[in-house]
Image (tube, rainbow, N blue to C red; front, side, top):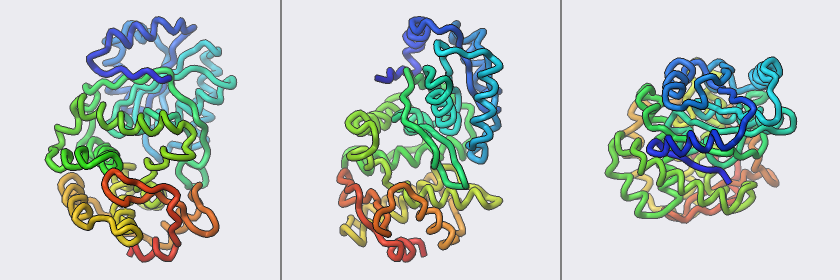
Length: 339
C-alpha cells in the first residue's frame, strides 16, 4: 500500500526513506524540477543530499520511448541494482515515465513520487498507472505499478507559472463532480488559493484514492475517473500536433465540457450544473480556446482503449456524484457534441 506524506510530515518521510535500506537513491527530474525543486529537497532531506540525478527534457512531447530508453541507459551507467530507489521529482510526465521505468528495469525496482505540480499531486501520483505516448496516442504503452510512497510539499507549488498551476484545478473540479453535492457546492466558492491548501489537496486526492483502492486494475468503479478524459485525451493529443499544444488540465476542461453535453443528452444531466461548470471554466481558464479539428479528434478517440462494437465506452454523469461507467456513445453523437 502506498504511503502518503504531506508537507507537515517531512520528518516522517525522511524516516521512511531511511527505513527502506536502499543501496542508493536516484532522483529522476525534468529540467524545471532539477532547477527549482531538487535544491530544495537536498536542503530538506538528508537522505537525498548525495543522491544521483537523471535529468530529462520537460513537457508532454518528451513522454516517449526515446526518453524511456535514455533513462534506462542512465540507470545502467549508474549501476543501479534491484535495491535502488528511484525517486521521481516533477509533474505527471516525470511520474508516468519514472513509474514505467521502475516497473520494467530489472523486472522492477522500488519507486517513490515527489509530485511538484498541482496536477501531479491530485492525479498522476496516485493510482499506479504508468506509461508513455506512442504513435501520437496518449498513454498507449504502460503498466500498473504503485509507488512505495508519495511526498507532497506545497512549497513546490510556489515555483509554478500561473498556467501550470491552474491546469491542476481541472482534475480537482472533476473529482468534485463525480464525488458528491457537498464537494461540488464547496468548489463554487473557491478562489485559486483555496485549491492549493494541504486540506484541499488531500480531500481531492482522497476521492481518487477511494476509487483506486476499490478497483486497482481499472475494470470497474475506478473508471468513474475517466469522466472528461475520453474526449479530453483526444483533444490533448490533437493539440500536440499543432504549434499551440494544450496542457493536460486545459484539455480535460474542454473534454469535460463536451462530456457534460453528452450527459445532458443521454441522461438528462442538470443543465444548471453545466452552467456552473462553464462559470468555473471562465473563472479559472478565461483564455482557453482550441480550434477543434473534429475529424482529427475523432481519429484519436478511435484509438481509445475503451472502444467496443464501434461505440466508445464513456463515463458520463447522471447527476453530481452519480457517474455511470461503460456508457456506449456513438461517434455520430460525439461529433455533434464537438461542433
